[in-house]
Image 1 (cartoon, helix red, strand yellow):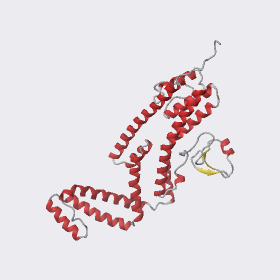
Image 2 (cartoon, rainbow, N blue to C red):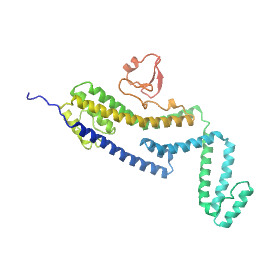
Image 3 (tube, rainbow, N blue to C red):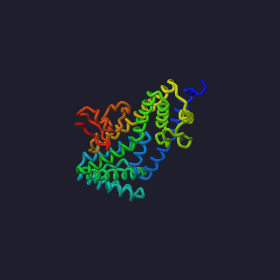
Length: 340
């Protein structure tokens, strides 16, 4: 009949393949940017910033190497007393000074004899080993300085511990922002797919676009451009704009959007799970309480029909009233509470 809108039916395999490739290319570029940012931070001696950049980009192997060093240092600190660390630092400082004052083979041999009388086994070294010994002495001296500083600071007051946990919580929350956005967008996709209306179709495609590019500035209901949806394949942008013009998705297309959205969410949950595990480990090893650091998004959380694997995030009075008495939940201010 004239005047009726006909369903828009593109080749689903084409746009899904393009979306996947676009997402992979975006990941590759993000990884390059992350490594560049982390490298600059590390070169400037800012290891916390390097570590944060690596976690944010999913480069967990490199980030774990930094954490392993921190954990090793923390273990040494806990096992030693302040006096032991101070004495070790004094001895190591002397060794470092000696290593850096030697310039000739004769001076090296004289130093070996002196150190040998002091009970230090240095007989196996020769002048050619001096550069390595200097680097090693400086490294150990630095580690001991940090260990002593950590030991002195380890006797935190409750207020200091609370401030430290808050700092970890903010860092974890910052690294989890994309995960929360993707879970919210997945909920939008699934809710919209059940409506079987034009508005529902808009929600499906818009939600999927936000999963591909959480930083997109496109607003739901307004036409998307290449600039406003730079991280989204143009095939998806074209479908979205056609739906805004009145065309509809087919049932098959809705199912394909749901499948693609689920796949993206699973990948993000796996990455988020690794971030969560690392922060739980950091919290335990530094005397913080993991449950006061890990709030909000969980690795296995669901944004539709409630969250599993952790306390529900309550945003409205209606959601609060629906909770059974005694249920643990996360309030809008981020604190974990129990319903009376």
